[in-house]
Image (cartoon, rainbow, N blue to C red; front, side, top):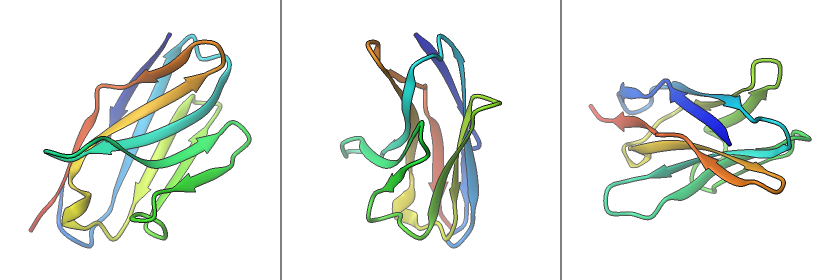
Amino acid sequence: QVQLVESGGGLVQPGGSLRLSCAASGSIFSIYAMSWYRQAPGKQRELVARITSGGSTNYADSVKGRFTISRDNAKNTMYLQMNSLKPEDTAVYYCRTDQLGLGASWGQGTQVTVSS
């Protein structure tokens, strides 16, 4: 199993920026995709962005043009650069990995609050 630790969350004003990090350790072989999900109070967890081992990315429509997902394979770390943040981006953000034959692993989450 992979251990995932998210960091970088916090309180930011509308229009501001944050960068989330997700550090992976443990059995990190065969990771073919890494993703960011978020869950707002009273709502289902939703996919925000995903990046494959080949570098392909996809984003939720609600964050396209504002968020950028990236990964540093040498550091086993994934990032989510979030710009032009809106109050509706407020949620707990979770990191997820998908591994061949082992399924998904999740981090504990980091709170992002966008408020004036």
